[in-house]
Length: 427
Image: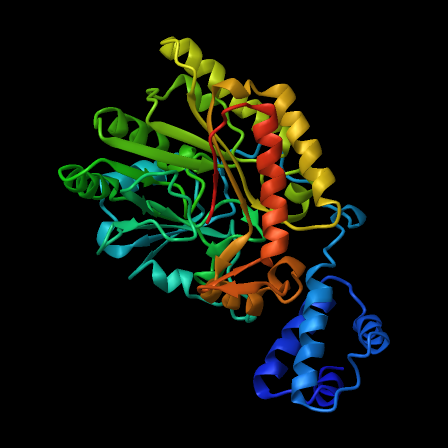
């Protein structure tokens, strides 16, 4: 079918690559390409006399597929692990430890917490992340964990694709790489072939680098981009350590991004209004289809409510804004998306005291072109990954019309319900 269509539109080599991508998306999302070709014929786009007409036909095919989203409600949606909070005592995992840190105190502390059937000493953590199994597939989440020392640069300036929330000195750090969850759209799947979690045990080195920056200016630091630290707290204990560190450094504000539904941490942490707990919220149909192994919407909302109550009780300073952020990001384009996000917002509005929410993040799905290209090789059957996104300044994203419609709709829901709400959108 690819060759037939390519000949019919006089496709160049570049056009041929685009055709294969569109057909991959059609196959992954259950669309019948002959139906779309018939539509092109009815519109007079086919057959084509030359390459110029062929490009117009290809553009039209892309447009038809882009604006024909998936219907996730009609699929069999797997049941997620309700309120999944961490791995705990998982006897099925393999532990990898870099040889030069085998006697490190933090390594011993972590290994004593968990019952690993086997410990394997390795040269470098990237030897595991770059590994492909003998069957040709990549390593999957849950089959192991790596303890390593992070070297070189430890802090990075925030990427353009990330929201800086109005902060001039915006940075992020990676004290853990890879996640216990299995979100289909996660950019981490495009970084390395294997998605085994790597815990970097030299958190104190990161603290020192932060302190060096603080000598020059206040810092806004995201510490949970490359993982979900809340879900890994039983192992690493880094949420508590970041809370303690931030509270003792007045010019530091951090964000801990999470989907985790655990509530036990609230009684143990040192509350600080400069430690922002940013919860990703999605409609349940999106969670079940694309955010595998994560808590459902009900449990995420319950965790937020519990945290806000704990903060109010512990701090009791009369402040209106608590250090909680609601993130409707990434928004995923599917059939009936408007109804899904409206229903989700109704639940959020009815169960969370929004007058005490610090701010909101709104954004549609976007990802670096290099990461998505890797993911398309790994996940040929994922309609979300194979979708014919537009490329803008090195990032794949939905067509501007779709992205703007979705984001404006979500922003309007928030603004109409919470007058004066601070809503940040990715630009």
